[in-house]
Image (cartoon, rainbow, N blue to C red; front, side, top):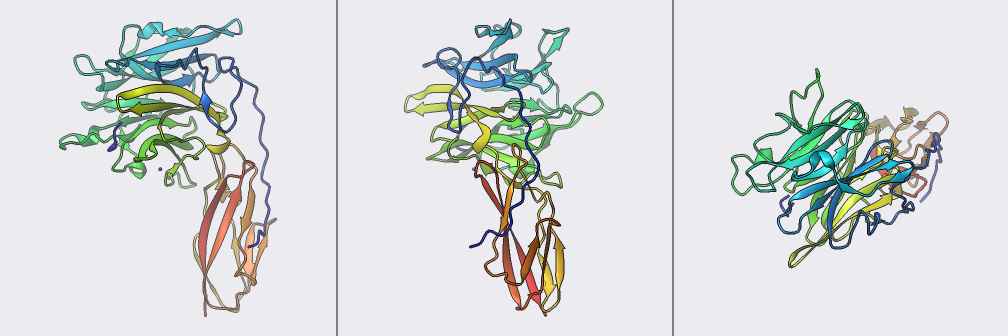
Length: 392
């Protein structure tokens, strides 16, 4: 990826509760906190070796990750699994031995592995998306996914939802354009036991690359990497779906996770507890280090506007009442949110937190900006503003 390649608190509302999932053995490592740390140093993340892109099966019993050759950037995929409650030593994944392969991703069912593989007869930067299926509990023979997911252009990585939709990156929109290498994000729905079409995600298209895509199995959030600026380099971004099934504007992931190096190749565990990603260090002589990091998701997910109120107009001297959606904000890993609004200029406004209604008797004309806020248990905040216009 290159450069062309992001007052007064009035109301408190507690919603729902959070379930507790069983602990999972992530290669014997102590769980991280909100600051990223190298994952399994010395065994998976080996100093001087270029690791990138890790994935776990949903049951936590298998893992796969990529290793790059420093000379020609050819790739290999390593694999480990739990046998008799112990992790095996990571070794080259046998079904992909002697292949130039990258970026493994286990499907949400754990019975498929998506990965990219270099095109025969071309340089290692030219790749297609392949899939490996489990047959009677054993990994079978890899097969290249056909068009329209693959094309004559470069398809870099892919991941899958519960319903079989595949999300992937491709620079196919550069065909016929000079000096264009820009990658975008695409998706392909699973219809009639096939993927008959592939469509760009227009909300994410920009002059920079969008790559390293991770889609949640429920398709309710997406993480990808994008070039931010010359200081921060490549960072992770996140977007969520709103009530209308639209992707909201991507937000750069919290600064405790992103760094001044290249942060890419995201993967989130099936319980949304941990984020894994690759941190790539590049010096004057080229790539100097590439390790896999992990971090808990307390600073990854934050409240987002799911079902916003619209601007509204009311009449001066007349009572009004507005219903406030109970799902105004959502949070992937926290259903218990604290709501607040600013009331500095609203001495004529009342909020009923039980009924979720705004009501009032406006006494002056004008446009009044009302800010709704939501805070989760990790103090992550999100705001949304509406305008209440008071007229005669």
